[in-house]
Image (cartoon, rainbow, N blue to C red):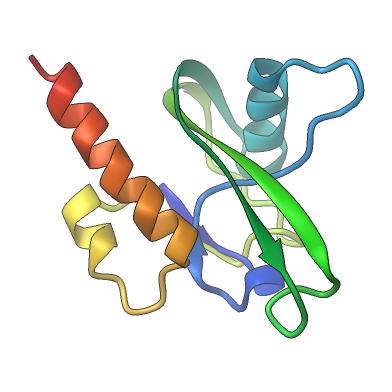
Length: 123
């Protein structure tokens, strides 16, 4: 499930957010996805940890982001997009997502890692 956000020039990407003080990574992941999409998830695995720097005009301000990409399973809820954060959402196969014309570079790399993860865990 990929999203487009006006905050990120409507490139296709994954959900994101912040971790509150005292909140675990698992709880933050569940909360952010629930807030932004209405979906309830179960965290399966941590796929990758990385960071990147954003600057205008890509982002509204200079910022250092730390990403923790997770493999999750949807366990409930109905898609209900938080319009201030997400302008569009769609389900894609990994191969279809990798050829999207406007995909965030970090999402592209994450999808490549997810494809390898899925190949390893399909056995």
